Length: 69
Image (tube, rainbow, N blue to C red):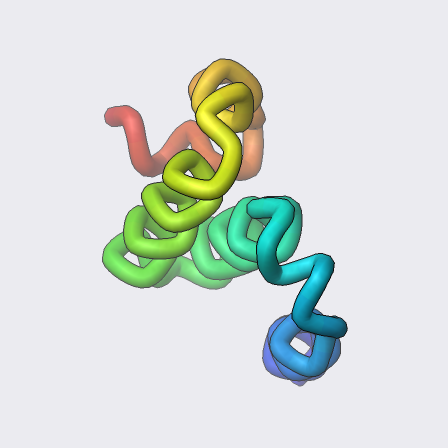
């Protein structure tokens, strides 16, 4: 499954990338698109905790629209 492969690649990212919030943001997008809103919400919360500015992006990102409805 292509989505699983993408998640696997993101989870193998170096530690410094994990600390930026970008990894969690991207995981949230994948999980939302794959139909797992619960995991997507957890990921986006983690991203916003690491970088509060990501909240603005998340609220307008088409990949994450399912989380706000």
